[in-house]
Image (cartoon, rainbow, N blue to C red; front, side, top):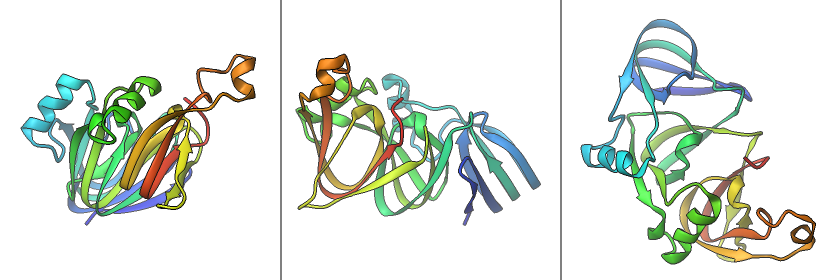
Length: 213
């Protein structure tokens, strides 16, 4: 199976042994060995999922690397975090996806399916749209973030509230709801951010970036 290694905060290496890995177009910066590159359209998705991405504008441009060797990935100086997915579903904004491989099934989900009306509200407030990318199975997903990504644990006793613009993705059995908080920042011209938060409840992990987009 492909082996992911963190080289530094902004670069990863993926070792292939006659295997495939999919990555954001333009992210490959170097490689060693017998590796061929080609444009990828399905990348672990079915035709139905691909059509849904086209209809919802939740798609991403991917390149497939196939063969045996090492491929190095980075993108636009952004920070990179490797997230292990172990028999669960990772929900992540498509712009934040750097790389993944064929062990995972990629798809698209309507946010309204997570929390009903609250899911729709989260997409409207965040400006990220009503759909998000999903990855199911057992493998790794490398994500991009503005600053180091942080994984915040959510438990039934300890919910987590995040700024919608800082949200990257989440795993686990979580529900989301929009809440408002009129604090002092609201009265000094920053009402567009901190006056709205997304509250996650349940059991799982929420990934955020260290600075807002």
